[in-house]
Image (tube, rainbow, N blue to C red; front, top):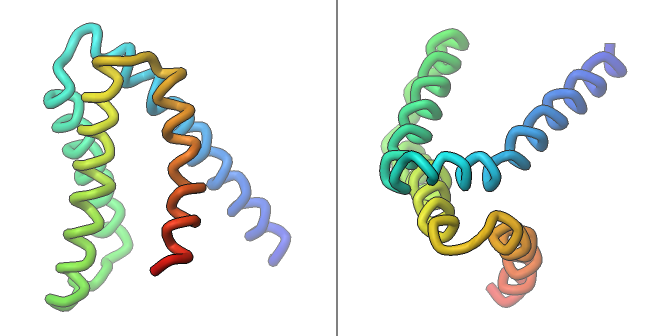
Length: 116
């Protein structure tokens, strides 16, 4: 049973990594036909629709006000800020250059996190 859960977790993680690795190239391709703001709106709508369906199926409880506020701030950064700023950056540079910057972000997050 434990081994099955580990394998399932690894496969879900692999799918997540594969999906995230396509973020920059697919956004760059989409910028040929759409504006950065339209791409961001579509990503937010798709993410919120999928999350809503999953929460409904799982019959998740509505969080309290304080938790909802934290989730809201997190959603603003991860579901709105990241896609918007990524699309805006990719409209001025290549996916390769953006990928390098994106790869360095966790390093600087760890460095600055040690000062907090």
